Length: 331
Image 1 (cartoon, rainbow, N blue to C red):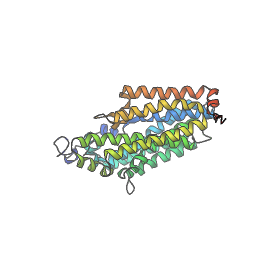
Image 2: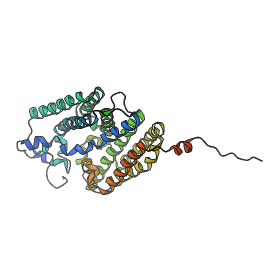
Image 3: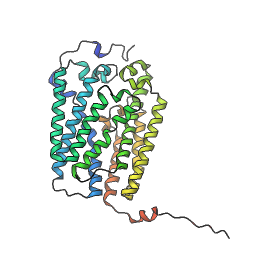
Image 4: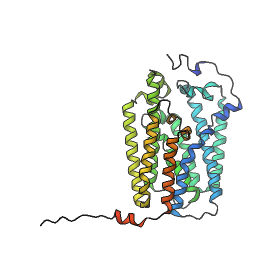
């Protein structure tokens, strides 16, 4: 029995795709995810203070490059996942499932987006270009056999969330070409992305299995054969703890003022986890996260805290952070 009592969309002979369907698989509506580039720009300026002579142009071109490369990855994703997405209650309405796409045109589309993205990346800088190449490789690793990491439990989350530190590095290298972000920041951003992706899978698992469609879920994605609500929840907790640890290391090592932003980041994590536990949660569709007022309020507070603390010095924090022991009178 299927989720709505019907056969998957793929079981019906689909009509030939139009230009609209080919553009749809590029998922331009997912461009909102590139908001994760902005912290890289802000922190790079706060810590490195690079010259900003051509920063505006580099940021604009860099964003266009990131969107193009992300679209190349999305084209590959939708094409290679079309038979599996047919078993998902919402993804079954994707263009690659409902329409008959030409493989030659799909791969041409992938090549064009990838080429445009890399061509634009060369104008931004060497570090930005190599990071963009890694961005493309991550899409191949995640989607293409023989590895196809999205089918492997836990590795699917870890490999998908690597896009977070990649986006952070893209933002950083847009304005600072002489150095890369600290490893503690990259690892914290990576673990935070893993938390987001883990919460997304938890939400999918809860929604689809609540209707008794466990078989559909496992046919949609092989990794779900190993997942349960319990181990997904525990993994989210682990990712959040690791993110907090690495972020705290970065905060105390590079700018102690940032430590005051940690409570706002914790609220942001809690808000996203709360969303993932709701039925038909937007956590399953991160591109729509801006529709949640609670999540947006938490995000704005966190971003404002990081932005303000990037430029406001608080010397008294350094006095508080110094080791201090209260002596005990033994007499």
